[in-house]
Image 1 (cartoon, one colour):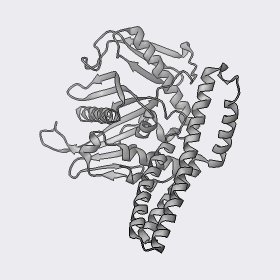
Image 2 (cartoon, rainbow, N blue to C red):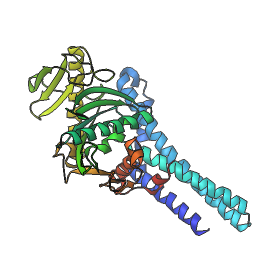
Image 3 (spheres, helix red, strand yellow):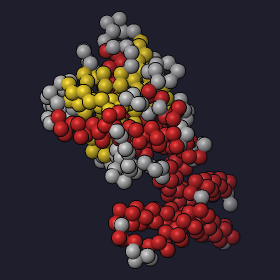
Image 4 (tube, rainbow, N blue to C red):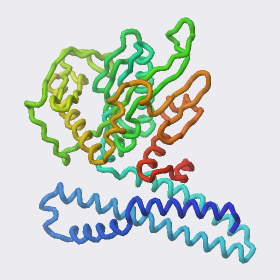
Length: 376
């Protein structure tokens, strides 16, 4: 085979190897056989919630194993076609098989991304909080830019965005905001964005046109469903009500019904002011608090608490996960993976998938699968 085809084949084999190791094919096959046996139990649907969960796991495992097997068979078939074409000097057959391998590489890349989103809470919707760091108007404007970036990312994916809390800055921007982003694997994607984000630019608020550095933090936690049980003693929670301080209009209603819940043992606090009803806001705040406490426990089990809770540390130097430089040059760089781009306007308009995929890959595989780079 020509060197370029050999490289393509080797890249696909490496990616398939990563997929097999991530899934643990032997363990997955054994678990699927166990699930198939359980599915034949006539008493299974006596507990519909348990049965539904079991069938979802079965479908997911079956799809992953079938997908890997299909890729391996397709790879063997195309290698055979290339060898046949070369032996008969039929360049048309070789070219057709090479194009099929390129398409196969993209299929592998998509399966890699699906494999990366297999965590316990990845399928859930997500809460997203943005908090401005020290620096007044500069950081508050940067916080509003980040909020727009994530809402644009969500809209491009067809996700629903609901504003739950927004505190305006004195002159411009926002001090903080909380939104709920609903869509398939919303938390799985957004969990990569938790941390401090740094902006370098010529300030539009500085009459001397000096360069400023601003920081804002992003916190991500999953919207838990009824299958996740989080018990919170009411005696451990302080309830405060206040006047809603948002922008009003299409985002946040100006009412006297905003609710803040503080979980005293952990210090975790949530605020909701989206509805006109204090009762509705309180119910939403309880859902948010349960989600926050679940996220903390989830991070402990993943042994990632220190890194993934970066948004709760100082919002400043030494804690940032990504830098956005607009002057004197154009560059967005992720400090965890090294992924970077000069398309700053695209990133700020929600083009974040490359950064998210690289962070997911680093966590799952310890490196960035090469196939991901070629996904359209």
